[in-house]
Amino acid sequence: MYQIDAYHYIYLLGILPLVWLLYALVGSWKRKLQSNFANPALLKELSPNRSRFKPTLKLILFSLALALMVFGLMNPKIGTQLETVKREGVDIVFAIDVSKSMLAEDIAPNRIEKSKRLVSAILNQLASDRVGIIAYAAQAVPQLPITTDYGAAKMFLQGLNTDMLSSQGTALDNAIDLSGTFFDDEDQTNRVIFLISDGEDHSDAAANAAARAAELGIKIFTFGVGTENGAPIPLKRNGVTESYKKDFDGEVVITKRNAEVLESIAAATEGLYQDGNDTQAVLDFVSEQLKAMDKKEFEAKKFVSYKDRFQPFLIGALLFLLMDLFLFETKTKWVQKLNLFNENENEV
Image 1 (cartoon, rainbow, N blue to C red):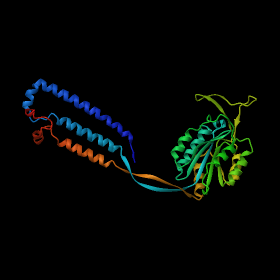
Image 2: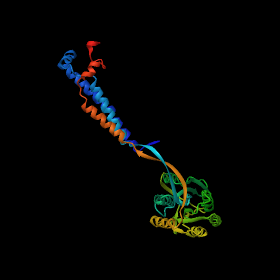
Image 3: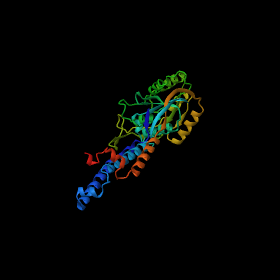
Image 4: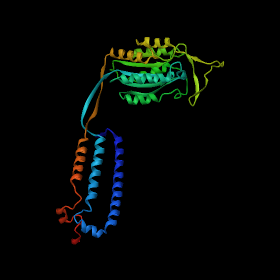
């Protein structure tokens, strides 16, 4: 198995056609000047030891050296051994609210973008914990199953938006129940849900879902985004606000953060609520809570350990450059005797 560290250096191979073109132009220019001085037969008599093939051979050697240097810069790596890696951590599911109320701009730039940045910042400080992502509005949908691939988590995170679910609302109970299905390891001691929302759930089902999660040994930490004063929900087209969402009476809807709902959900599972508007406070809170939890060893994972293999390419390039340097354009006597290149026309 192999891998390449820096693929972008391959574009340097584009220098080779330029070198060959320059060689052809210079050769044409030389022949033109020589023809003005004397005819080919006379030139051959004047320089009988000049080889016709060595200039081309020197070009080939230089091209090979340049190509090997480029491959060396790309730093190819070849797998040499298999290692077993064991990780210790906590299983975390991020449940992110994508309902229309998350478009409110009482927290910059808006609640949904703030939530995504918050989750991304948390991912940046995790080490070996497994993570999963779900999105929810009036219903909950899985986005990323439990994994240690934080890069994939960030990719799925960026794809979240308030248009991904047609039905609107904030069904916290569905989000909690779906998150609970992500934990398939019965021996996992610590299962955590980070629920990010403005808390606008108008049903009592969330408390029951939290109780079910507590029975499964799941601890829920909730993060509230938005303000208690609230803000209207903008309706935009091409990034421009055209109006605001209104109720059946034609009044502009003001969506407010409901911290009490989020606090009750967290308390039902012996978790805690944290204001999600302050990113640094959230990061400190998450770090403190995870440090206090017992880590369990999981997922003995095999991967290939790669070693750099740029050295042979650079050594080869150096050898070709030395050969090009010490290869003169005059004929080699012993090669001339062998007549490998048909240079001895008298024997033709």
